[in-house]
Length: 156
Image (cartoon, rainbow, N blue to C red; front, side, top):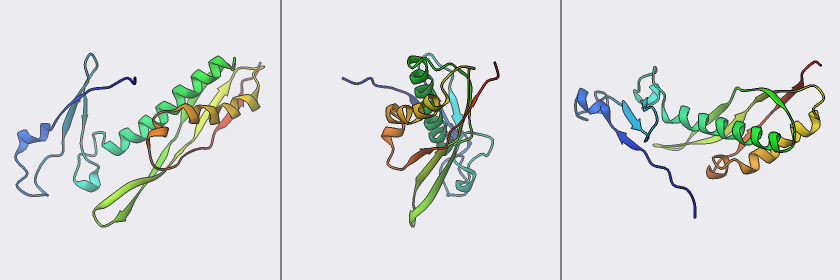
């Protein structure tokens, strides 16, 4: 049996008026998670959202990047590869599939990893494939999630 997750989403933009016209209503929302700080978001600016707030596209890209990192750190720890630092500059492409229907078509993760002196660089690089296979967020989407990792070994 799987684990379930719950949240409560509220359209907080309603306080600024109803959806009287496409141009006029606020896209702001609040997501509450039990025992965690709430998240405030909006639509992408292309859809008249607030550019200062996270949008669903940001959150999906962040979920993919974070899941890969957490999976990678776990497989490295189990394989005795000491990771000293990890950064990712991820990007995603959304394309219009047909009028009024768009989707992510590709995500590229660009992890930059530094491992401890004496660690096996080839092993560290190969572990990205294993991390990708166990990342349940990547396993849940219907578009390619690629990675172009760079690994450096720290000076001793």
